[in-house]
Length: 296
Image (tube, rainbow, N blue to C red; front, side):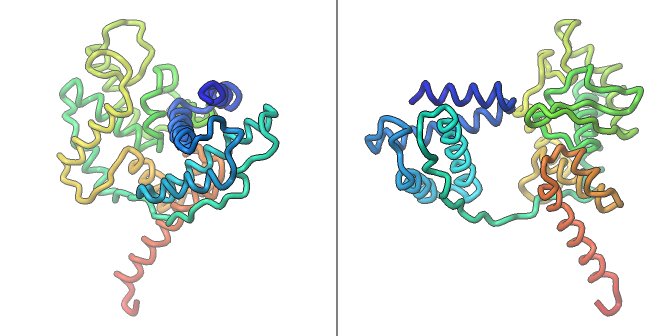
């Protein structure tokens, strides 16, 4: 079974071009499923039935996993059996007709523009690390990049003169995103006064490097963001790098950007994914109306 799982992960990597984080997610989900089958005395994926998969999902529910997590596990299993079908290792997909648990759709946390400004003011821009952190935060808010996309940027991906960056997003789909003047200034300062001091080798291609001159990791950026959120005293929980992405999209829509443009900048394949931000803007309009209209 392990060999088949490796073949599937290789297929996702080569044929579908999925990102490393997505591949790891598939592998984790399917290893859990594999362990469940082993405990049930089933020594091959091909002998598993719809009932076995239902019991696995029920076990995840009993462990207190969120509906969204259980849905993702089911999607991983479905994709795996579709691969087995393609390879003619099974005659049908036992997960095909299973229903996903209904997940409650929660609106994402979005910072106010005032809180974003407060956060962006926190790095000490006279210090080497502060200049780098300021450039990263400004760039994240200016472009709506995912944190994995931010730390994957190379020098060649940013065109300061033309004012845009080139990003390889999910599924290695390329997109071009404009840069704002504030982000451009911060990146220029970082490149001029900070990055060279952090480097250990002159031919380093990475845009944002850590204190050892190597590519900054997602976990490293999470720690940096957490530090500045605490320093800014921003109230509330659950502020992540994705919060700046949500804030980027919401603030654009609030100021008149059209949904299709925001979809392209975010790299969403389906516009329905982007439409959640219109719910946020409608909610804010209602709040303003209730607060300001004399007969609201």
